[in-house]
Image 1 (cartoon, rainbow, N blue to C red):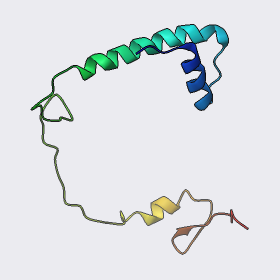
Image 2 (spheres, one colour; image 1 turned 30 degrees about the horizontal axis):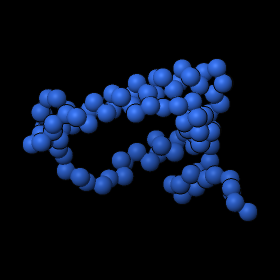
Image 3 (cartoon, rainbow, N blue to C red; image 1 turned 45 degrees about the horizontal axis):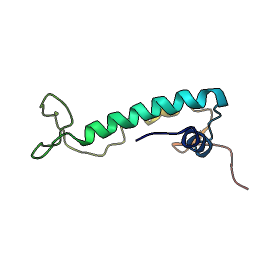
Image 4 (cartoon, one colour; image 1 turned 90 degrees about the vertical axis):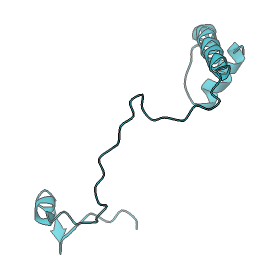
Length: 95
């Protein structure tokens, strides 16, 4: 797939990126190379290949999913400029 200067200009406008005119040709060439690499990946036969999250198969240590309050409310609120009844007090943002 070939990317033209007009394609680069359109993508830059849609993404709100300012690209000088003299850089459009260079970016078009780079994007064409990237698209060529993606087309090569589409040619790879992946039939029967299981998806993986890592090249090393490892089991993550699991723990019980228990909800706690951390038991450190005083320490958390110690840095707050203002607190009331165990909650942060913040200025009203909406009138």
